[in-house]
Length: 234
View (cartoon, rainbow, N blue to C red):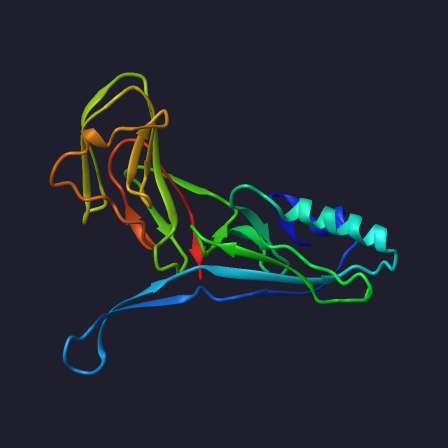
């Protein structure tokens, strides 16, 4: 089944899914144009979006009923923000995306099997593990996956009182906060943002610190709290 935000398309609308095509993540090479000589200097390879195209048919020759079914398909696919799309053949992972193209149907050719939905992954174009894993700070843990940007990773901690001079380190990068107010601390390592109860505390991030980079492999992050992560694949 094809699920979007936990709801299966096939249970909402009697469609016959013809195909599901998942594009690779678009490559986005960065280069610097040479002022005199021909050619350009390659800088680095970046990545862009990914699209998922679902083609299907509505085996119903009643024009009025077909339009009703198409509205139901649009209602299932439409959202105001990116949601989780789960596809057959990709167990235990999801794609974070939003519908960017709704189907258009022929009134005359009721047998048309080329109607399609297109979803686009923007913020997170990787296949992401449905299961979130966790470890206690100071203990070794192993992360798998092959995403260029590493896993989705954050540090969480609940403080009953203000704490001063708090340090988190993986041996290579070290983050120091001169103080952390009482409340629910979340350090988003992907966005390089620390918050308490949803409010930024980056004013307490000390000069000379270096944010821990999410990465695969066996690792240990020292400090107080718990590490939570979702593994990702291209």
